[in-house]
Image 1 (tube, rainbow over the protein chains, first blue to last red):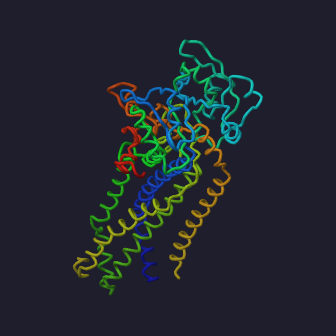
Image 2: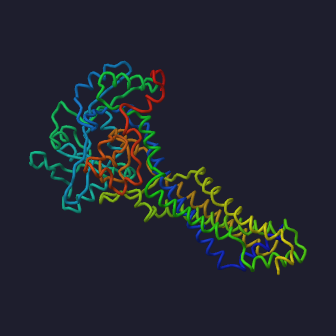
Length: 389
Length: 111
């Protein structure tokens, strides 16, 4: 076996140019596939890790198929449903910042809530004095950078619906670890958000419902739907389903990427399967004439393609891990980050899905080995004189 | 063992070592990240989704968006952002109320 393996390596080196090309294409294909999967898995794991911090039920109001403001008094009726510990209206929305052409997500929080003061210091670097000084906000890194670039250093003048300006000072920045979710966020007092959006006191964007017992969530959701048939109820399970369906591999750019990858693989396999070159056939003939058995010739061919595919796979996976988590996936990350000027650095959590890497392995390496086997077997079963002639 | 086999095994071993090394390095780097900050942020805002694509509301908060959001730009141009080729619409955007609840059991006995 050792000798056969040594012969296979020698044979690979003899046809260095062709094998190098196949090695390069194979590596590139696995690299692109692995990198794309690594990025999407990391983003997905980032989302799923925060899933249980989200509210069990969010109630929206739908009018004519479109989400609209919900009456805050509904929160009181919902809070009376058995099993609900708390229901509170929430105000949030988008503020378009014309100089940069970007949307900020403006979220109102109630500073009187105990959860507010507790979590605020863990998620953001706060200037305490400034926070207490009046109209202030806490912004994400991206918002802060955009404001500085447009000479709003430490404040922003919001344009209210009636055209008046409202100055709000920056009292803190969200920590870098949260950038994937806080980059475009502006968090401020709910009253201030109402003033900026011109939203009256009796209306809210949606209602968040807290249900301590997860078993009761479906019943509560159904009761809310009966109570207010125009509401759309988004449970945590819906959010989980949404997160899992985050990237639609069946469409768009992913399909384009996979098509390129699969097409490249097809070209390699076609090249291999379309038959051996005259030189290779002659080599097999000579080996048979020297007394090699069919099984030994086949073993050499299997070794050849297995060495090529295995080394290519290892190189590709090693490179893709370094590319995604070390270099933060330049070029490929643009697929995931959209084209708005407000883009976060893709600080991905380190997450390797062994199953996905195994899937890529089994979809490429054995296929490649198998494709080289058939033509080799055909040539190896011929008589020596027939092949050489 | 022939020199060729030794070289091949050496290359494979070096690659495996490199792979293990970078895995350990990135894992150690990841452990220093404060994951509680992210959970705290989500608890504070109670809002889902990532801020990686922010060009429209239905992409930024896709899990909470409704079917009409994508048509907001123009009725004949439902979806023209590059990111929306990558990010599938939220499965729940076509349902009133929660599709999963209705699918689980028509009588609502269990989730």
